[in-house]
Image (tube, rainbow, N blue to C red):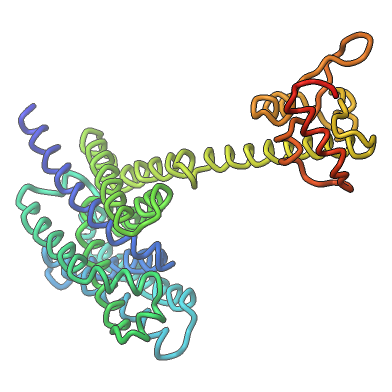
Length: 385
């Protein structure tokens, strides 16, 4: 029993790795081109192909169903391009029309198959099921995955060009329409590849989520594609294995939850673009602005009193700016822009600008060059003139 379980898990893990990696790679181009909905269209459009393959073959033949899904998905992608080019329809409208048409046709065919009493096994292709992947399926999956990745590698520069500058690529003489067609067909192949595990409804998440997560971490296409492949493989393995070890748990939703967790962590903690990093950047910007305001206040008070060495008390600065200034004063002191001096009969702590502080402070008032020179001399000698 333990051998059978490990054998099944290994099969599922290898299949999920292939599917997740290929989906992550292709999803990167969809995300960068702003065509995430195209994956959704092709994924849902595979439904009528799945049911048509079942009806035409008369059995739940894996090959017939996958071929039907591939034809339907590729036809949907080509239909979107035909509507955009032939009618001038906007991309979002073309995607919406094709998605609605194909998915509606799929629901009608599925209802017809249910009426014949033989559609129970088709639910595997709707939501995915790890147990439906057999060891014999790994070889054709691997061959298809290698073929897809090989095409991407061969047309890497062209796909990169049309992803970032399609008009420039067209002006350079590249066959942009043909390249977009190839990319749409590759997306359809990737979706068909993952039907047994993720299903037609949720396979789109395996295309988009890893690419979105990878985009948060890197700024270049090459690293993004590699990272998206790793994220896709990780989400696929996690979801498929958890599903295989559970009882009656559909694989597709678990894979999507795993991919969503990766996206959530990336959105929160990725350096530079993550929510935490951006919150820190905003905090540092506010602190920097506050320190600059404190320097400006010290400079303004010294200008108003006609004394570049004028010493200001913390409470005076708080009132001047209408906010607490102690954190900014401490940081400015560490940076050598201001210094503490004892002033008054009680020897209370006051603050004055150093020479560097005078240079760094914003110029909020008229500048007395002679007085500023005396202030610089005072700073250099370390005492009052």
